[in-house]
Length: 356
Image (cartoon, rainbow, N blue to C red; front, side):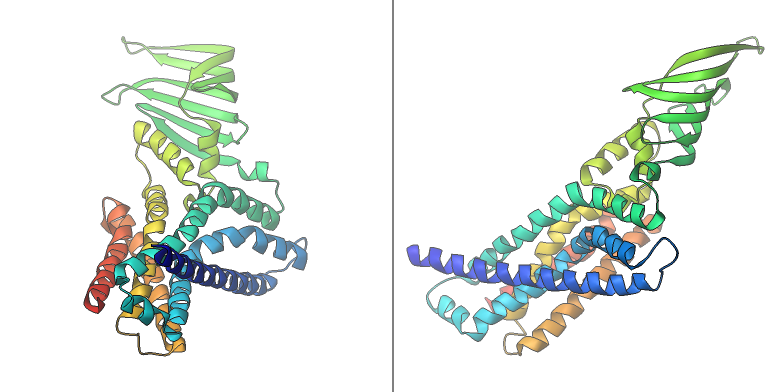
């Protein structure tokens, strides 16, 4: 039992270090090439230092995208090192099952799974806004400004000419319809301010109500309270790319949109991609294990790395292509997001089953 624990620790440590090393190298290359690309976009007010800050703030997003490929390459390197030293042969001869070794490798990959979740939930929403702020020469608060925003809550349609993340509105138009979409009334306001959940205070309002007899009444007020489920955080989320929102933000925003209108597919796609990211990482690690124990066990390390890069990039582009195709051809992006992941699990499992 003690010997097995030592072996498990050795395999886990070796593959974990290989994955972290691959992550560091790929991240460094990503930052370097991205910065070289930004140097071609220099202009007044956006110099080399600003470009570097923009790239560094955007590095967490790039890191999040390359983690599955880093796990694949790291697993190939780690297990390949063990195979080159004949350590895997000794483990198998000592009675250690293939699936147990695979489990140890997946256990080390969980480090990258935790890192992936931490980046998507807490780091990327903040760093992406900072990156945009550096490149646009605007404060982060100004990035939350929206001009010409439409929202729907049941039979109520709201148009806001200007809104920001601080809960300030300008030129608000509210139109109410009954269940048969007959006009019930309109409300115009010059300004508005968020008070608390579900409550807004509008200033300089003109409210017109359509009476049952067909005539209308017009009421003007200096201040008027209006019940809206809309919150400043949802207005702010509209200004952020869906893939830069955290999973919790996506759940909150989609819950609001689902209750009062239709959830845009771009937000559904971003959500399911974040849900599928850990499974994609583990699926690629499974493929890496099948390379070492399966058809590539007699090949050189360089050849294994080339095949791993080819498979990783193919998976990345296929998942990206199918994700955007789902916006047109699928009622739910979840199907297209998980098709490449399930395929990788099936192929990896089959190759490992043959090598057992």
